[in-house]
Length: 66
Image 1 (spheres, rainbow, N blue to C red):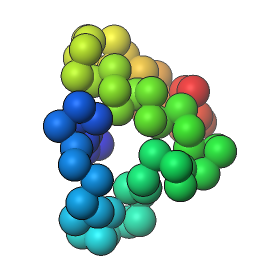
Image 2 (image 1 turned 45 degrees about the vertical axis):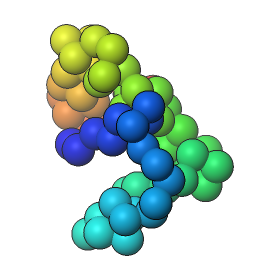
Image 3 (image 1 turned 90 degrees about the vertical axis):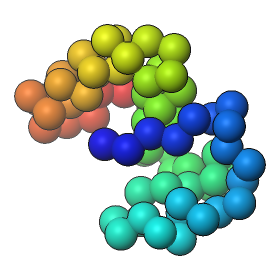
């Protein structure tokens, strides 16, 4: 997973256009079913251990963690 620092993001859309799988959205355009990943992204920058646990849980269960 890649993470984008929500504090440093300047909303230039460069990462959105560069994402090969279309997984990056402006905050206002995140699909409802993916909204939990916005929280996971922010968590990465405040508590990497907790974020890693959520990612591992997601990988282990093969379903949405959020």
